[in-house]
Length: 235
Image 1 (cartoon, rainbow, N blue to C red):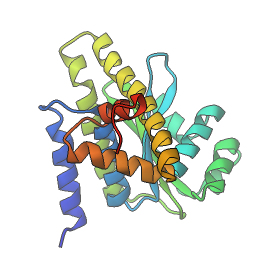
Image 2: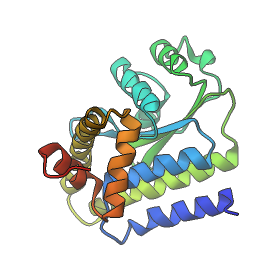
Image 3: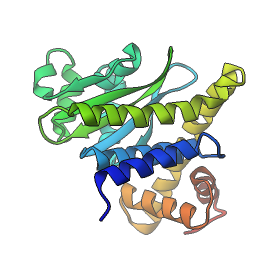
Image 4: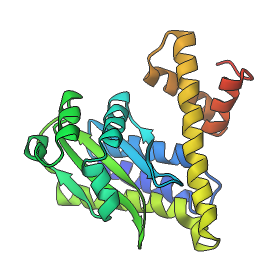
């Protein structure tokens, strides 16, 4: 039987492979949020990235609920996920009821969506913070020290994967890659909406269908989404 440690090692291996192989950033980060939610027993997980203009965007999410909270958080301009990016430090909230005075809009939106605690991990390499990995839970409580360290390790590997080009090229190259990932996410969201309406599915089911097709055919998720929105592909 596969243990949690086995799953963690497989995830580390998957992320590490991106250091040497060509990879799709959006798909890599989707793997990170899905595996993190499972490994660390989170209700949902999401990743925010900083775009070229310095704005924060939801790039990967395990559910529409966490994406909704992320969008609300961005509009409010507050919350632990934003603070993790701004400070470069891990921000843990064991009970969202305790931060109502500090982040009133975020706390209310999160609780309305059923979340009671949150662990935000900056995606950081030295002085560069490109985003945050955010673990949402539907119960009160902290993320224990071992899990927190493991989650940070996964976030660090993903960060190195994204920024590896910056180590050998001008920073504009890495920024271009990030912007491409964000642009790809827009196309993926459009494809999700198209499939959801066409097949009478919810957005999560539509995404699973698109991602399943991409994996079965060994294609990039963003390329499949572009073909769907342009009418070149029906699935």
